[in-house]
Amino acid sequence: MMLSRSRLLHTGCWFHRLVSGHLFNSMSTAANYSANSNKPLYRRITAIGDPKISVIPVLDQWVNEGNKVDERELRVIITEMTIYNRFKHALEISQWMSDKRYIPLSPEDAARRLKLIYRVYGIDKSESYYDNIPKQLKSYWVHSALLKCYAQEKSVEKAEALFRKLSDLGLARSPYFYNLLLDLYYKMGNFMKFDKLRNEMKENGICGDRFTYTIQLSAYAASRDIQGMDDIVSRMELDSRVDLNWSCYAIAADGYAKCGLQDKVMEMLKKLEGILKFSKKKNEGFNFLLKIYGDVRKKDELYRIWNLYKFKQKIYNKGYINMITSVLNFDDIEGAEMIFEEWEMKELSHDFRVPNLLIEFYCKNGCLEKAEALIDKGILKGGNPTFRTWYHLAGGYLKANLGSKATEALKKAISICSLESKPSKGTLSTCLGYLEGKGNVEEAEEFISLLRVEGAFSDSIHNIILGYIKDENVSD
Image (tube, rainbow, N blue to C red; front, side):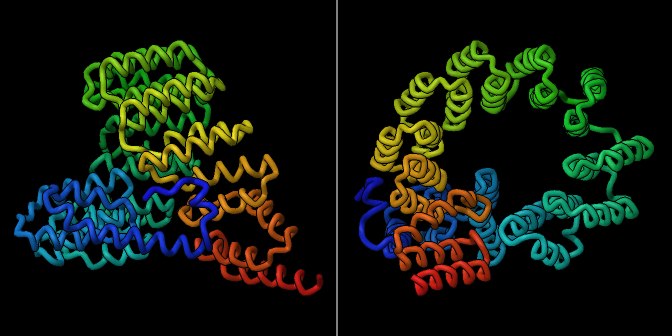
């Protein structure tokens, strides 16, 4: 049974709906295991979108049905899960391979698992795993995996220490190790260390690759060093050892765009299009072109690329997201709605990130009925509203002074948001102010408790705010 937006917001006790919904989803997933018996393993695993639900029962059932466990297939699934940020499921499969099927780990498997542990549990757990990896598995792959974790953590000291250790052992002869550290220095804005390491690379006879060039391009763009960018582009094009692809020109174009050099941007984009014709990953290149033509406000070029994209490739959700985003850069809601209608007719998976773009525009511009209708329509088609769906709606309600509806929408947003996607302080403050002004202390307490449970703030802040609300109620 599908629930409309209004019923999701207003039917019964909100907390009871949240818990019941979670239990229902878990039970439904368990019940569907048998219904999926004719599906391949990949389809069964990808059908479980909720990271809170384990994929281990699916793997166990696959074996209990007498199916063969294919190592290569499992590794492909792990890679796919990682690409789509489903790190917990990817880690579960990796651990299941060795723990239950006794498939011996390769150095590549260990490196992959180390990065997944970092994604799911953090740097301390990944370091602990690294320390316990058998010596015979501690290869290039494993060392580079830990260095990448340090780079992602932006832990400069640990990254430098590991790099020096590997250098002393003669293991850091690949440009990949240097690239990780160069990229870290660039992102931390430490251009002195960046230049020093690049010179060290030359002195040690380590030839750069296209990633080395693109990191340098990004660094020069960040420091607005146009001459440096020009020099890197020229050297990159003349270096016969470098396998140029469209992404090299994409980074150059993006760098020139940040410096406001439209002519150079267009020059890089024309070169990009020339290479893209021979690329295997054309969709990614087209998606970049859609984004940057929207950024530099070239509407005619945007639609030219869109029409070429439709002619050359099958367009998936990400392509529609990029096109609608760029069209909305021109405040062209009619054009965005036309692209959205094209997306609906394609009947792709109902990814709510696509309608979210229109929902956000409608909410910012006071078109709440259109936003609500789009949410209801998406739910009826089997889509699942995201944190941002409800957050946009809460913002629209606040602008329209509909405090009760805003609070209910924000509750829904908080219940499904990740720790990285916290609501703004302004929105929280307004909703709390509404509840306080209405005198509904119990609802305010429930709201505050929800914020703590979902990690919006710490236990100490939770207790302070609750104490304040109760004291205000007593004084009244």
